[in-house]
Amino acid sequence: MQKGKLLYEGKAKKLYETGDSDLLIAEFKDDLTAFNAEKRGSEKGKGALNCQISTQLFRLLEQNGIETHLVETLDENHQLVKKVRIIPIEVVVRNTATGSLSKRLGIEDGKKLPFVLVEFYLKDDDLGDPIICDDHAMLLELVDRRETLEELKRLGRKINEVLKAFFAERRLNLIDFKVEFGVDKAGNILLSDEISPDSCRFWDMDTGEKMDKDRFRQNLGNVKVAYEEVLKRILEEKQ
Ligand code: UDP
Image 1 (tube, rainbow, N blue to C red):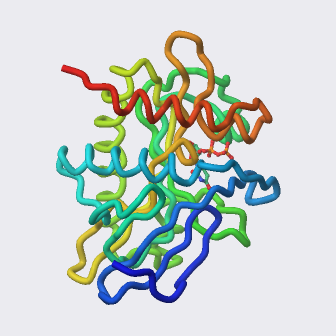
Image 2: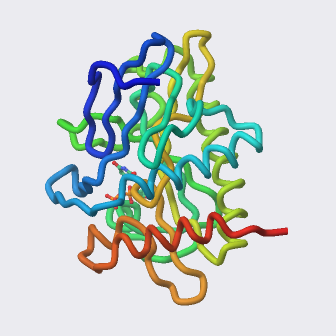
């Protein structure tokens, strides 16, 4: 499958048309951004690592009944994906308080939450991706039915269940993550975008070390080393 016209360029990926109007090619970039792109950087090989990590995790989720946009991986940093209309909601799922949750609500950093928290953020860089409630989502017509919001929460929790157990076996604590969903031609809701250390937080269960984009956000160094370690652990065979 050949890359056609560049359709869209985001912070971490480029999307290209293909000869098939139902399929796109996603290219994972080496760029890193944080704090609504106020902090920018690049890490050679990061795109390829995220492409491989996301491919593995999407396959795992598919095996567990979550439909995704992924068709196949073309090479180390390109995926063939189904064309979808992205629902402009970032679904954030949290097991442990940190980041914006701790800052906004004053919950101690690192506190395990008594239940899985699912939040919605409006996908809008100009507004700085504000947190929204269900009524806001309806008001802005981000989805046409409240049931879709319930479905997004259910999918977020299910993805969390699968990933949390998978990473626990690999001595990584899944702290929180962000996912995006798209709607295909037939109206199916598909997990889209990516799941990678750019969009998740992983803390090493034994050392407490951060193994994700917080290394870039907080200038901790060894960003690529951490992403490589996450991929290595994902590829470990378990019983
Ligand atoms: N996240 C993301 N993209 C965003 C905002 C957040 O992938 O635009 C991820 C982030 O990596 C973390 C989770 O969502 O795993 C929760 O992020 P939080 O709201 O704590 O935001 P931050 O502290 O990064 O501002």
